[in-house]
Image (cartoon, rainbow, N blue to C red; front, side, top):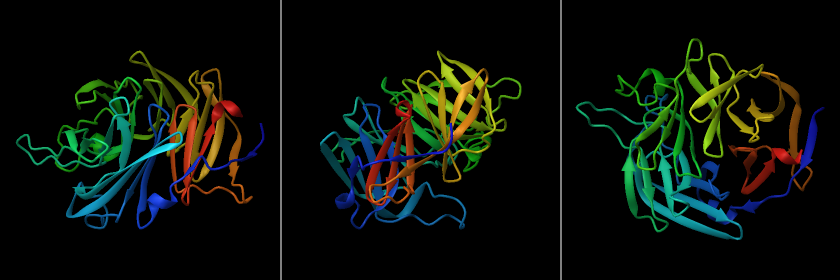
Length: 304
């Protein structure tokens, strides 16, 4: 398969909701809904290097859920949490917002960086999903998969025994650990570079091996690849295809024996004829979601 250019039309526009806001994240919810998180301002980095877990001054957030022809807009005008992830939870009834960082202040005092809200902005519950979260996805069976980057694995922000030390954890909807990755030999996750949920399970791409792991029934099957640092991935349910997003390029691979082999790059074209250059990318199984300007575009690996 050679490189291919695919024309796409916007699935939805968030131009009205985006006015005076900055996009933070996009996601495909467990029910197929599109989730977009906006903020009024991006908090400055602590010491010019590290994302803050909480902010000195309150920040306004806007959470948008698009289901078919309907949409729900929830404004959270005075939040001091530095949120990076947003999806629906509790069978789509509530909103889960989570920050990638969490401080452990000692003596059992930990920051609960995950918060669940009603659609009218009322807090339902809060809990901690650990520090150093790089990826988050809620499953149809209402669990939360989190993939962690190196600081959440080796410990930072006061964590001597990090919750994300395994690199990949499945949480219950109220923040109890339901499963964690158990690597053997050289199958240690030092950084979960990319992750997607496939049904209720997860697939991931990790350092140090840069292999791909598919979890099924608590067991992990591994496949090699020459992709060495993708930031996002989409995968068909049978694992026959994996699309990697690396350095601004979408690289399609197919499974051959125990390896994923490159089949070409996918490029996406907007109705104007211009190449789609996404600001934000999200996946769920074979589904790809991209935000370009105020427009949301979707693609399904099964269609090409």
